[in-house]
Every structure is written in C-alpha cells, then in structure tokens.
Length: 116
Image 1 (cartoon, rainbow, N blue to C red):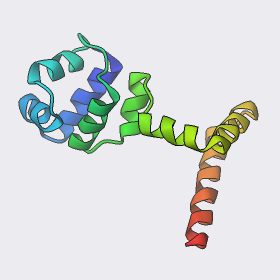
Image 2 (tube, rainbow, N blue to C red):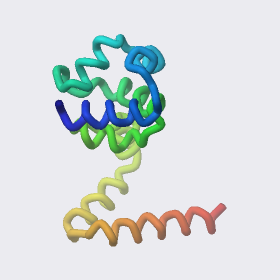
Image 3 (cartoon, rainbow, N blue to C red):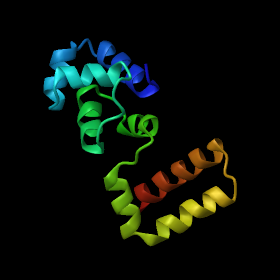
C-alpha cells in the first residue's frame, strides 16, 4: 500500500465513510478509489486530490505532499507573485528550520491582522 493510499484510507475510515460513499462524493469511481488506497494506482490528479481532501475533511497540502504533487493554484499564485519565489529561495538557501518557518508564518499572520 502506498503512503498516499494508506493515508487516504485512514482519513476515509476516520470520517466513517464507506468506499462507495467517499468515491461518489469525490466524483470518482469506487473501483478507482480502491485501487488508489491499495497502492495499485498512483495518486490522482490535483483536482481529484482537492475533492478527496474536502470529502475527507483533510488538509489538501498533506495529500499533495504525499502525492509528490503541487496544488496548481499555489503554483499559479507563486508565478503571479515573483517576489514569493525570492522569499522561498531565501528560506531554502538560509537553511531555515521548521521552528523558524513557523515563526515566520506567525509573523505573517500578525502583519495581516494589523493591516486589516
């Protein structure tokens, strides 16, 4: 079983959703969902990942990380805001730790709140 499929199955079970019900809500066939969960299929398209995350009440970013994919909306946003790429590159090149990135996020949230 793939890590993506295993996580997806665990999320579905945690939501007390049957395979068929979850698949229908996500707009895919139960057979396809079953194959994904068992690792017989690779992770689905980004659009399906977003639908599955919504159905399973999960953070889509977690599923995107497990799928080795990126949310196309995030890619588009980064491409529209070139300064974001500079920020990400700086964070990477400077070797920010997870704790430092969390502090950066909290600082960003404070900045946004004070500007509203």
